[in-house]
Image 1 (cartoon, rainbow, N blue to C red):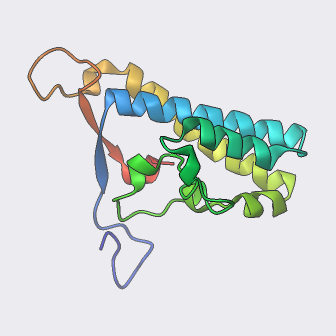
Image 2 (cartoon, rainbow, N blue to C red; image 1 turned 90 degrees about the vertical axis):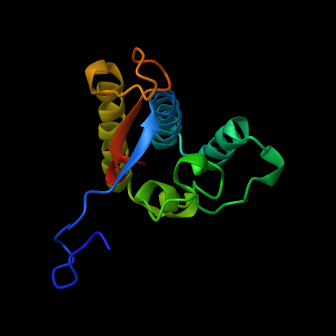
Length: 153
């Protein structure tokens, strides 16, 4: 519904998600950990899949329910941010098997795209005059900002 039926390349609606400042900070930290693990995998590919699974178990609310293999979303990464959205991102649908099959160049391009999103999160978080405090008070962790859907991981 956010694309023109005759010209699907043309966006007709600007879809955004309200995130709190705390949520954006958590998302930034999580993405940083994922990228660090991906970058380690470029340097030492042996054990990369185990490292990403260990990170998922560490970050998961219920490590016993982690999916073996599957996408990052199925492994529990950032599920609470995207689970109910009509949105399927490249980052969340990526499987570890896909990652392992990609050539190094594609992996680096992917990491660079995620890095640009992390830079956006940091800039947005630090730009306090953009945030709206719903209770009319000062900007704090519960202040919100409408983040573009395509800027989610």
